[in-house]
Length: 169
Image (cartoon, rainbow, N blue to C red; front, side, top):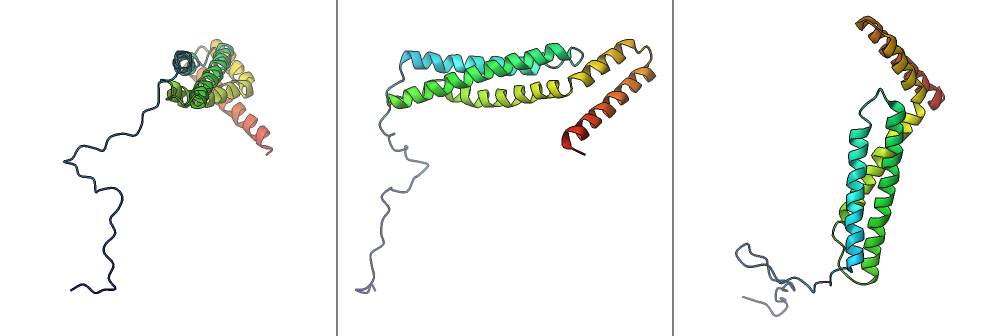
């Protein structure tokens, strides 16, 4: 028996969702972004993908450290340009109250990843460039496996020494 002080159960504004019922209709759709913003978003995506491909494929050859450093610098520049294009495309669409351009969000995400990877690779080649050159010279002169292992040991020792120097120990 209900008492006069009992309140009726409050119902939520949304009915409970059922897996058997169709979802509620979506809210109002934003108009698509202008074609120039769409093109800017796709260009950003393409540039950031190229940046990632350059850094992943162009820096694998450890024997050509100078070339790998140049590839890392170019990949860093391309990633920054792609990131700027993606951000300006998204902000332009927001300013005109339009939908986000295709590829812009992917351009931002891949641009940040490319920026981090190419920046860290470039820093690696700048900091450890002399050690890499010394190792390459040693390996080119090595004729036996024992000499190659000695070159690798010398490289490891010089890198560890450089790290201790940079950390102040």
